[in-house]
Picture 1 (cartoon, helix red, strand yellow):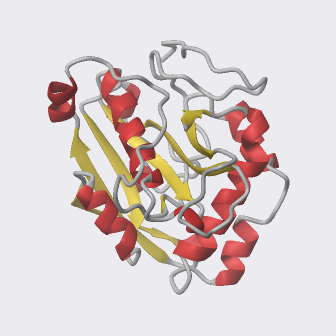
Picture 2 (cartoon, helix red, strand yellow; picture 1 turned 180 degrees about the vertical axis):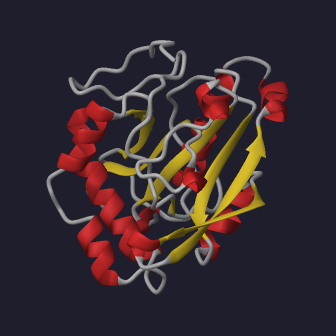
Amino acid sequence: MIRSCSAADAAQIAAVQRAGWFAAYEGIIPGEIIDQVTAPDEGARVRQTFRTRPWQRMIVAVAGKRETPRPGVPVAPGIVGYASFGPETDVLAGRWPPQLTGAGRDGQVAELYALYIRPAWWSTGTGRALMDQVLARTSAVRYRSVVLWVLRDNTRARRFYERAGFAPDGAAHRLDRLGGVTEVRYQRTLAALRRRRGTRPGLDRAPPAGAGNNDVLMHPGMPAAADALVPTLRPCLPDGTATGAHAGR
């Protein structure tokens, strides 16, 4: 099942992030940096984002008690993946935290900030289901396109994004705080998606069984602040509720 997240999910989300970073970035980002950035804190960093980043939206993929990634692989029920998204941020300006671009502030360009899957759930349809929901939700509020940043050397994630309709647009950015790795920007339009769907899809639905390959996908340079809300998207709130966002740009 895919649903909007709440502050009560913070510890599980942080655990997914840590497992995903170690599995996906092995040989790309030094292990000691990954360990420092994702150090266990029982979800404190995630809960802080709920308080300080009201414009950021997050959805989670939840496995039921009887669901397993594949036959014979026992996995505890709970959150197995998540995605966060919102208005486009100006990564190339070199400021930290990044501020919104004009297109992001005006509701024209969205950004997928992160998409993480527990390694045991790679290639099960979970990542694709989360991606579909991000595209559906951003399209539903009339964004024209979506961008994302992915590590240049994360070839598995880049293949996934390309299968989802994204393509590199030539922009690149060096992440000095993560050992000097380079990330590249991908982009796709949403007009064709709106034409195919015709009407706004359901916002919470279970991932289809056997939906295809999925990878752990992430933007390690996640933004830490911005100043806009996206109309009608449902944010994570500190009290664990989900509600329609304010159009308070």
